[in-house]
Amino acid sequence: MKACVDIGGTKVAVSLAETGSRTLLHRHSEPTAKQGANDAVAQQVLRLIDAACAAQGVKRESLTGVGVAAPGPFVLNAGAVELTTPNICGGMAGAERGLPNDWVTATLEAPLRAHFKQVRVANDAVAALEAERRWGALQGLQHCAYVTWSTGVGVGLCVDGHALAGKNGNAGHAGHSFVADDDNHDALCGCGNRGDVEGLIAGNSIERRFGRTAEQLFTAAQQGDKAALDIAEGLVRVMGRLLYNLIATLDLQRVSLGGSVFWHNRDWLLPRLSAQINGKLPAITGGVQLVAAGLGSQVGDYGPLALMD
Image 1 (tube, rainbow, N blue to C red):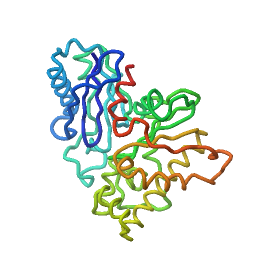
Image 2: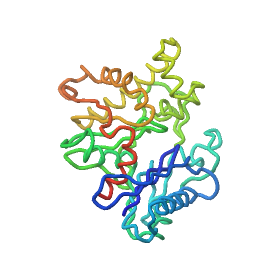
Image 3: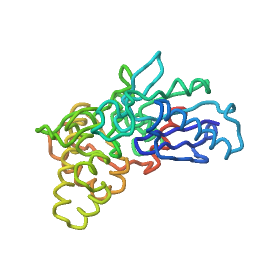
Image 4: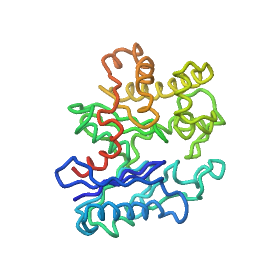
């Protein structure tokens, strides 16, 4: 039995899976801990694992491994991953960002390793990439990406058949790149940047910038609200530029898209995002596909399983 942990800026979810099985058991989910000591998320994960084990009637000690998909960036402390996640750690952008803590990092891997022999922590978008390559919309592809548009904006990259990791496991943090041509001082990202992609279009940024949740904004846009439509089309341009840059830089075959902002508006967003790519530098973009995640809204749950499978 393995524990599958999906940490996000909004929620933490834990499921169990039998060795060799894709069936996820006893999923427990809570809003992500953001108060108290900076090991609060790790302690939450341990508690949720215990709850899942109790529901399955097994002991924590019987688990053979724990896979953790977590939003980065990561820093390594004595070889163990700590989170410097903009939507969790409030110490990077300061009080203006509005998070209820002053954490610069959140410890994660070390507290888990104190209880489990096998722990693998990876960026959540990289974990989702691996799940999509194994069971979803990226099967059989050697040059591809998974992009999540959710509370934050994350990317997992595969080139020449290899998922990219980087020196600290942070490859793919394109959500903190800049694609706009002004400073966008209203777009403070939790990492401290102003005007990066995540600061402009992430789910939490939309509400701070425009006074409407992503759900409210895109619903209004699809109902013909002119002001909402103008804003939504601007958000599409930003994400479209990010996707184009990834394709042009890495010569990708297909990009799988997920995350709550995208998923709940996928029928409206997908053709508009594709239009941002089609016809631009066709030697590279010709034939490239943007597709909805094959694992749908469960891609985040399957990511940790893919890390251990």
